[in-house]
View 1 (tube, rainbow, N blue to C red):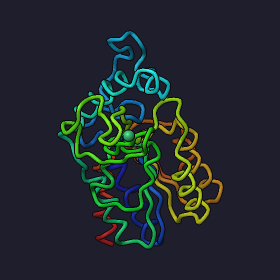
View 2: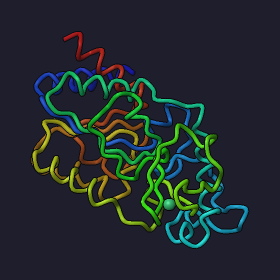
View 3: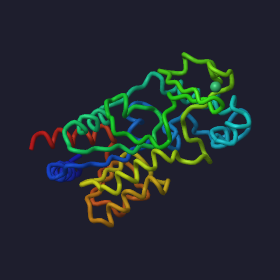
Length: 256
Ligand SMILES: [Zn+2]
């Protein structure tokens, strides 16, 4: 903590001079809500093979969803069940509060738990989707559920009776073009400061905004107890958990 207090003061100072902020968030921020982390999908698998004898990546792959949706739904619903009691934490809350205090704040998240929206953030690009949104690929019916206790697994379309899918990007699937377009639009406008929080940044599209910010000479800040793909080049590396770090930064900012 003593080592971190200098960095926290520095970050608060940068925020004082900033009007626009980009937050890139990953599983680490939701881990502070008690969610286990599983490669950005937030799940319960340390063991990588399922009961069906296939790797969990395969169970949660677009290909499996097409061929055997019941398998994908079985594992997604286990992940959902594990998250059901959890909700957003102080980290999500601070980011949502910042949206009301700065001119332009955007969140670019890998998480599918919907916690940023639940905490009150409006400018959210949930690039991997939200597991609470359902869509029918056959008739285009769309719906939202609070949790999966409301639905049968696999859930059936109320309009046409086919199995619906969650609006989630599974392994091997394309990223949604509309969300990528919003991201590109906002990246072109640029931000005064860029945060990467609780993500290992293994996906190139998660890493790229930080790389570009660095090339533009804009301040880059990473909050993560671990070392990641971007730790070497960020301006400030805060080795703390997300909720604790954001709360400390926000308190320091408001003192100044
Ligand atoms: Zn349908």
